[in-house]
Length: 336
Image 1 (cartoon, rainbow, N blue to C red):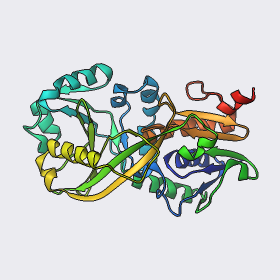
Image 2 (cartoon, rainbow, N blue to C red; image 1 turned 90 degrees about the vertical axis):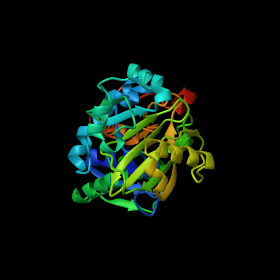
Image 3 (tube, rainbow, N blue to C red; image 1 turned 135 degrees about the horizontal axis):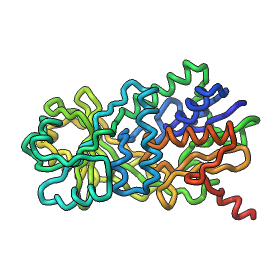
Image 4 (tube, one colour; image 1 turned 180 degrees about the horizontal axis):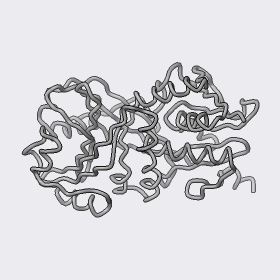
């Protein structure tokens, strides 16, 4: 069996690795000149937080996402599993209680426990929720690790190739091209996310910190070597090239409110990515002829890619059906 995967974002690489490890001959085609330069995965937070995500998503996201931590730990040594910490400023404590009612598998902490987990936050917050079983990773390093894994398995990634399922001569095709698949997946929409990379040597954090706010919740994710990723904006837009002044102000203000030392941080990078989403913000695997479309991961790319890759492999190899994520392609409905 031969499978061509189009798109080398996290979904495409996860599908390719899953199939290659099962003995399938896989080729990955990527239109960009190098890994990550044109995909929203490059600007992701990299949080593996299925139980935190229950706050604003369907239970399906947590169920599928719970597979991701073990999958990533087996394939990427940089996967860190030491929990997520959710905090709020004193005036917004009702937000924390509401977050707790919607989520699960956490422990409520007081100021001493917060200080024990994150000494640099000592005395700054009185209450928090600690999701001990969650993890995080550096998305760029994780993508590179999947690329190396494919090299080990002698499965090539061909860069600079503009491809479509129709142009692939034989075998199965898995299309993981995000918004570029909208010509077929007409109900896709774009949701822009904006991020900052800050460098700060005066603060150390060991895990992602989610700062709740009624208007702009923000997360700060440590990347090592004094780097922190700050993000969380969600804007209904297909425009990937601009970070607004308002978003920059909100992200920097949230980091500063977490710890005033962030006011002296170096801004290393500003980035945006447009994430593909279906109307209900849930992922889909759609089959059209010999092509599977794996899409709609929204802001859960690294969390959901392992489960969707497993399902895609089961569909290709064993013709399995997963009703929770598979549905009829809209073109099929129009042809019926």
